Length: 426
Image (cartoon, rainbow, N blue to C red; front, side, top):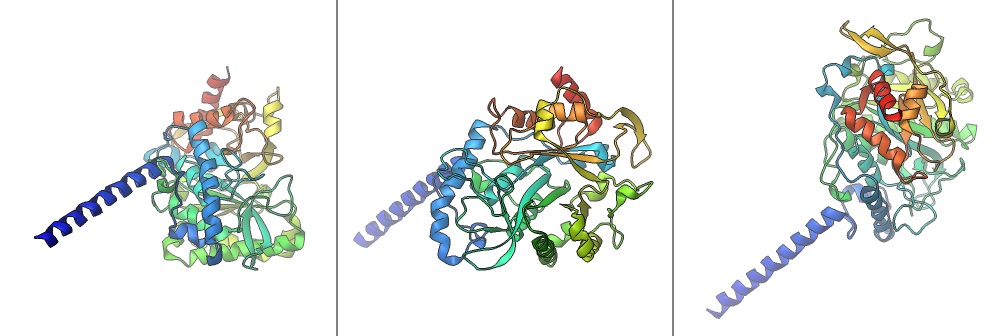
């Protein structure tokens, strides 16, 4: 009898411990600050002997993201998959604005981060994807990691275009890891919010995902050639994984949807959004010096994957934040016209023939006013820094969030965005 009683007491104690653990997990899930979840995603990017360093730094990493959630954007995005729209998917690519993020994996120093720089964080990348962004950006370096002694393509953050990454990570973060994270959580419908204390995940899984792989501007020419080779090897490695290959493959078979030197062509075949649904599109710098030496890279990369080269007639890197925020005059806003979509239906479009990106001239500049950028300049891809407070708080980041929330998608017609921006600025 006594044994039975002791066993019963033991079971009750176990049950109480279980309940306490559950309550703690709920608390952590709600706020995302008090623990480090050591899942394979966290461990993959570090060497085994540095696990303890990661445990100490991830609280700062989480604190930075939590501060952005608390002080900047407190509500889930109102972003739906563009495939739900039977109209927008029929638009040519250049007729669409895309919700975009700059330095998409960088936390900044917001919150309790005590270092001079923030972190390159897979959790920050997941947060940006959860906000509905479908044009993300990584600054990429060709460096040797001091811990693994491995030379490869790594993602970092630089101030003033410095040749070395200036972030607080104890170990450098490989491009391979962040690309796999972007595909896993941005395309494959794995829940992205659990470790960052939000109760929503990516709501527009079927949308195309544009990934800009931006070479650090101070990278010497000889290293740019090696970096491009490392980028292709990284993507080739992901392509060999059947879980990722369906998102990376060219939907047009052996004929690439995009081509180099489009700007020199008198006519170009439009690419419609519906052709890119559930696909990853890489946006890569077209360096003329490197291209003359390593043209094979461009041709091979283009033939296997969906690749857009900057300043080749599809996407131009043209405008910086400062030009948007200080301009009092319109540059060359597009004219709204009627044009045919993929099905031959007349739709409200513009006379623009190319997409334009808006990026900072240097990291950390105040975000651009997206309404001014669209209405005065017709810029379709306004890359905002989710980690940078504006002069008056986070007003310009919130303006970008509100535009896409109001229009309901991460891909919206430029003509609709112009009409929205006109009402918002007048």
